[in-house]
Length: 83
Image (tube, rainbow, N blue to C red):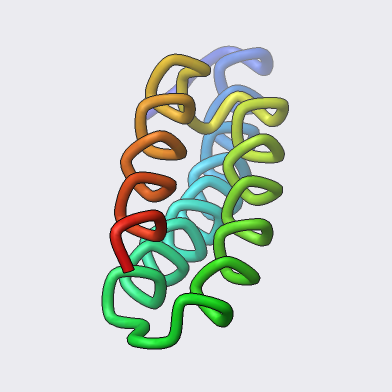
């Protein structure tokens, strides 16, 4: 258990960030699954635009690394292009 005041604050901050990060990561996983399972290429293209936005937002919040976001965006674009 934290003893100092600053350590207690750190615990509170970490908990808030953990909850936020989990929500963001869940959205990223759901949109990725939706793109992979989508049969219609036009609909998949629309989802891809939304996915790009979500990945960029996650990077700006510090949830995921920018190179990971770039890699995932490239993989999804390749999938959509093949449909």
